[in-house]
Amino acid sequence: MRYTKNVVFAERNTIQHTNANNERKLIVDKWVKKRKDLTNRLRRIEGQIRGIQRQLENGEECEAIAAQMAAARKAMDKAFFTMMSCAMSQELEKHAVMTDDMETGVEDITRILAKYA
Image (cartoon, rainbow, N blue to C red; front, side, top):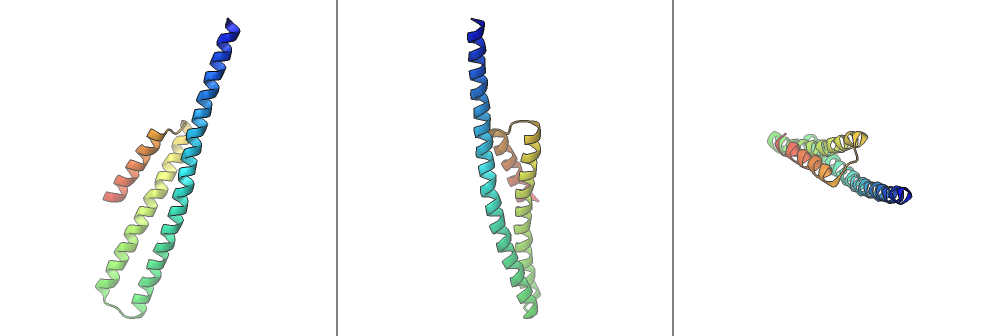
């Protein structure tokens, strides 16, 4: 009987470990996509900055340039908070297995920070 209990416990433990690994893989896959999206966002910001430089060189109105600078700054802030979300997730993973609920919580915090920062 004891042998059977150990086998059942080992199977449950394996299933739990497998589920945790699957959750971790999904979260890692999510961040691979987010990093790609972030890289694309930074490329767009880079294009915005080049556009601002052209505006300056062409002597355009200061208000129009300021508007473009504000847009680029807001885009950069959003990228920053996305990266901070990654940093928070990585730190949490050092101390516990990251679940979908935890990941959703980190994303919600990031969204709120980006919105009101």
